[in-house]
Image 1 (cartoon, one colour):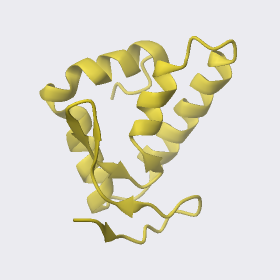
Image 2 (image 1 turned 180 degrees about the vertical axis):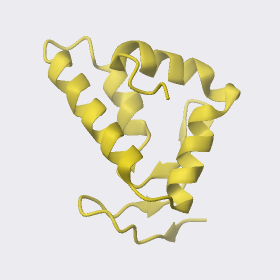
Image 3 (image 1 turned 90 degrees about the vertical axis):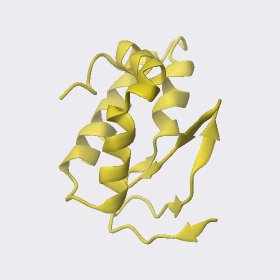
Amino acid sequence: MARRLLLLAPWSVEEDVHIVVGRERVPPTPYGHITDFINMYRRCHHRNHFRQRNSVKLRYERFLSLPASPSKIRALNWMNNPANATTLAGIRRRVGGCWSS
């Protein structure tokens, strides 16, 4: 069931709804959607992938600087879930390790 969640982030108001990426249920986050990272690493073979990678790093750092919220905690839990290791390994490899804490 989709429900609206107003996030106090100046750059986005996201719908608080889970979507499916492959067979994984992926949570939304305050900066946008975690699938932004997944989609970014899938297309990073593009000639502009260095610029894209820097953009993702900046967005991830901005996400970490946000105050704690249910969406942020849910996203961090998803990132730390071993069941999502394959997806996150691909993201880390392509984004250059900016996901490591």
